[in-house]
Image (cartoon, rainbow, N blue to C red):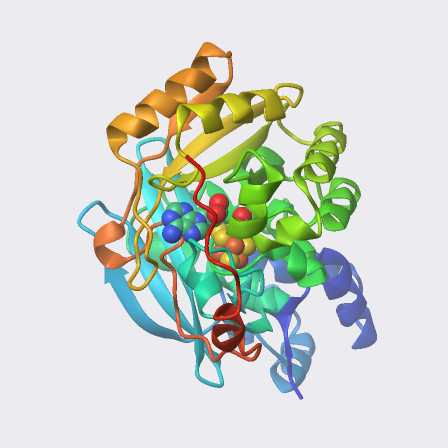
Length: 369
Ligand code: SAH
Ligand code: SF4
């Protein structure tokens, strides 16, 4: 079977190159050709010896996921539906802004965490993505957008920031995610700074600690509730890693983090987690953690039975936080006309967890005002 070179971070590529009887520095050349120049054909890698090109042609390839659909939003956001086989598809989203270009990457087909307000979660879980499938989203999008002329100057990168906020819980797919992160940071590949790569997690505590040592990128934690009773219901993983344990992990991560704060995400659900009482509870909860709060309007999807808080309510909620000196932003929704906003990424998932069936047996949502 051919190996896909997108699966290899620098160390793995060096080991592969050695295994075919070549010098380790060839790995660096390959990283340049593949990740910096977007070349997939070994014939075009002109500074490699013909014999090496031959060996690579026989045993290796550079394959990103096939694109099933390419959607463009009126605000410049672009979404790709990518085929991951067996009837599954995931999504990647490019979000341009004045001073940056952000790519939102998926890490799993579906997600097993099953948060109440998330359309990915509602579909159940099919499988983890490989390193090639994760970093391939960046490889493909970056070079496509460059070819489309989006780089300010020739050879300059288009994507300056990556967020692991697409489909899936990245820390439930740890090793492939970390290898993909290493490639994003590698100077011979994308050379992104740790501050510009953000991993978002619903709270996998042991893996937060591992990430601090293995590859400490910027961390976002999906909080969504100020107490365990409500969070147990919204983010079922809370039953395993409750808030006290999660916040202690955030404190530990801060010693390694590339920024001196953790970003807490909080999706604003009308009548569920958005009262001033909740805001005050949130203030006491996060008071001791150096953090910023992102309030995300709930992005609706069919059958969710939930509504977003009004802008007025979000502003009032934000005021309680800012009055307590917590830096708070109300996030703008981008790309909602193409269902590319947070939590709307649905792709196509063949559920292997019988989630729909099990969900019927969960108790009704706690509504605390
Ligand atoms: N699994 C990870 C990363 C993917 S979700 C996590 O949960 O953090 C990325 C962000 O989108 C999370 O903060 C998540 O809570 C939020 N999100 C999920 N569904 C949403 C929805 N319908 N509207 C707004 N944000 C949502
Ligand atoms: Fe999974 Fe994140 Fe969606 Fe929760 S919000 S179901 S963890 S993708």
